[in-house]
Image 1: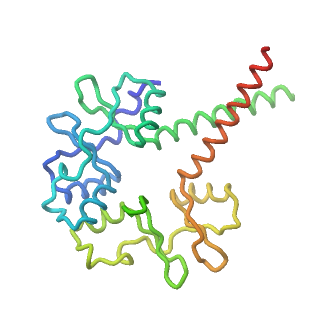
Image 2 (image 1 turned 30 degrees about the vertical axis):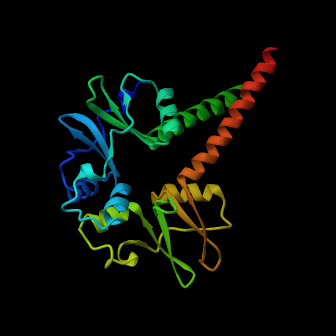
Image 3 (image 1 turned 90 degrees about the vertical axis):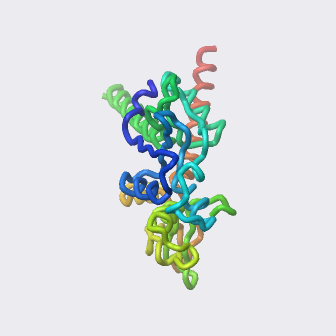
Length: 142
Length: 116
């Protein structure tokens, strides 16, 4: 399975010079917990709702004047679109991350894949396998 | 939240569960509208009266509750509605992952001994 199937949907991005207040507005409107930060079309950071809670509200910074680039995780772990699923899983495991932006060879963001996406996928595959096994045992019993 | 490395706090009053507060609530309901965190109380932004589960229920009941209400964190309460714990989707995935890995190993060993 190619990582390309995780590209396109749900990628919500923001520029590093935007304010945290704007970032909050976008997270709420798009119902996401994480924004991909892009500068000139290239991935430069990642910003989560937790970053905002701890580094803005927690440190009493003004969300109107605090910029995304001051709070985001700079230069985040990423994966190229031609990598495979086991590479992605081991990257998440070794770096202890649950969201990984997908980039092309030039560093352009194509999508983001989360641990939840993988769990949903494996859950679906497991239920298919379960169905196959019950059908097979029904047939042999008949 | 930072000190204990958690993304969620349970709110209790008089020993009873009354709310749940996540890092996302703080981002969207305090930082978003530029409210002063010193003047804003937990009660103003928490989710009041959250979905909970009684400690004597089973895991199947828990997963259907998570599914039906679209929640990934469920406080566990006793008969007096006092909080005794919290269980998350991640906890369940970790347990199921461990079980799956054991089943996988058992199958691999069986097929090895079968081919020998």
